Length: 118
Image 1 (cartoon, rainbow, N blue to C red):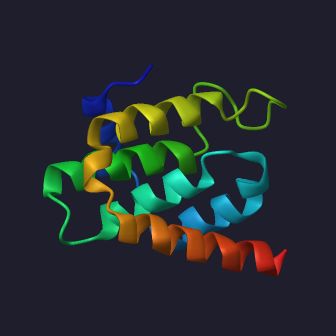
Image 2 (spheres, helix red, strand yellow):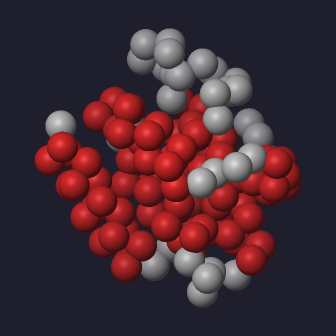
């Protein structure tokens, strides 16, 4: 399991711009049960009202999801996203109080638009 400090360091090293996040999410969101959570975390990390230390850790979790270097390769059927889900669960259980209802609402809207595009 990757620690919160390692996630923060990963966030600083990785470029987690919106295009890369949305490309990866569009490619895999039908196969991952945590699409809304990772999207809400990304939106919270981009929200200037979120405390900087929280933004860094959330960005690290998103970077771990986006970057191809992974503890368990995402291409492995059935288990490829388990490590990503574990990282997201850890971060949300620790910092989830900062992810506000409006982040989840915006995430749901964005995912609905992604589903509509097919």
